[in-house]
Length: 439
Ligand SMILES: NC(=O)c1ccc[n+]([C@@H]2O[C@H](COP(=O)([O-])OP(=O)(O)OC[C@H]3O[C@@H](n4cnc5c(N)ncnc54)[C@H](O)[C@@H]3O)[C@@H](O)[C@H]2O)c1
Image (cartoon, rainbow, N blue to C red; front, side, top):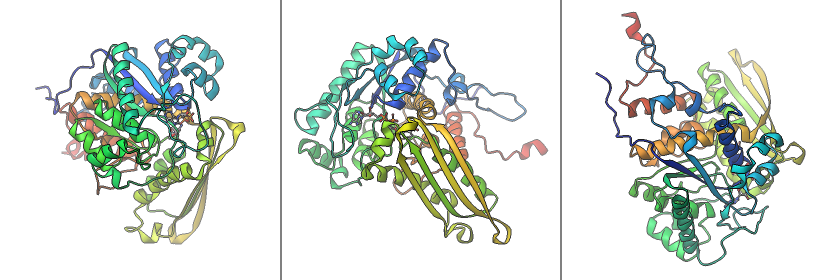
């Protein structure tokens, strides 16, 4: 008997609109990449939804379909893109300025990219300090602006004939702030929108507008955004999936690969110093101490959870962990990240590991954006609502239910993601126990 789905999954029919606050380096590399892949100009390297397989049943069964053949995902030809930015540059101009992709490749994609003109942004210079632009909504309260965003969303849906939409924040990192009383209930949040409460960040206005429009919301930056009780309640109330925060791409990705390995072998660590130089607009915004603090929080949280110093005081109690980011214009989007790791082994004998990762930030982030929008759409078609913890794989600071610590180990995250897909389709979950092969 074929397995029966645990959830009813509506088919992926019609167009899927991808709405992006922030038409910058990451989002244009994502959009241009999809357009290039559609034209056979490149491959979707780094994307699980496009390339990865999923093992089903026993190792001896030989069943390993591609994920995209196992669960119904929107096809690349059915994606349409739109977004908001404080600058008026089209996605083509923004991609040229970002200097991530070769001009010769962008020239071949000029037509679809030039058609994407950013809608007027909801912006507040108190939340992003080092940039300012003219393409912003100016009238009325934060609630008026949220309503304008809802109109933008409805118009986009209609003009492009979309059957479904997903929103993903690829805007700059906002300054660090904690949940305030205004974020505690939906009523206080809506009152705050009407009174222009300074504790409501622009990204929260977008998240509110998305959820009120029944559009799933993903957060690629470390901002607090939807991670507050009012918006979590709204997502559950309206049956909309949400996830975040902060794409796990370069240095933190390396950390969540390595740290579980050291811990698995019971090797100690007493120092982990990470520093980066990058010269794109993201780097410029992160020069502001407020925005850096937001980033630092998500980057620092990872090791503590993976290494569990309270359980292993001899190995990790005295770990000194520091993260630095410096804006260095000559490198543009080609970031360089150094890690110095001081580890110790048998009888406490010290060793050192040095990593020099010459990475490309947006090249690493673009496939994550693609996977997230396709999986968020799948989640919504499957009736899944609220925090999608199974998408932790993609984030530096995964959102979790209140009181639950996040899972940072990238391999556990991958198992969780694939088991969720197996569960959706009523397949056996894979535990790797394997005793049955030796009966
Ligand atoms: N590239 C990576 O590897 C990576 C990894 C994790 C997180 N991120 C985060 O993703 C985000 C985007 O990164 P990027 O390199 O594309 O940056 P970017 O500076 O190139 O693009 C961000 C864009 O957002 C716009 N913006 C700022 N505030 C806005 C608002 N309120 N509404 C609409 N647009 C707004 C800016 O004008 C800019 O064009 C950043 O927050 C970054 O920290 C990137």
